[in-house]
Length: 182
Image 1 (cartoon, rainbow, N blue to C red):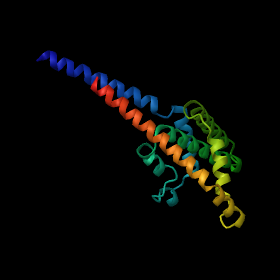
Image 2: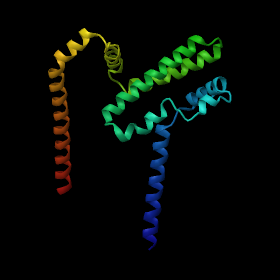
Image 3: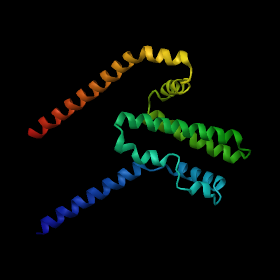
């Protein structure tokens, strides 16, 4: 009986320690936390618009892990980091306060390191492609004809991509079933 209690206590301590380590690893560094708090104190003054239940990034983050695969999550997080960098660059350029500019630069430095280390990728290249596609003029008759001319090839490519994704999913499912049987 005592051995069971000791074993339960041991595993409880292990899980608690693991939880603390995970939290510490995923938390904001103390100096960055301080800079963010100072920027919030400088910029946010009982502003109703800040708390109006229409978040800029949090709604996306809420759905991130549920609706997207890991590679898509990483890409989206990289794009979010890039968006933050653009926002803070604008704020830095518009600020007249030197200390605020320094804090914004400090936060950007941390964001850049985070993006380089954990979310490397081609977000800038993909952004360029997306901007090119968004800039297409749907009401231009020449664009409409070209789109129609290219549709079959684009459709085939999309179908092949879907088939590859389904094939990979089936392969992973088969592999997991084999592991479960072993």
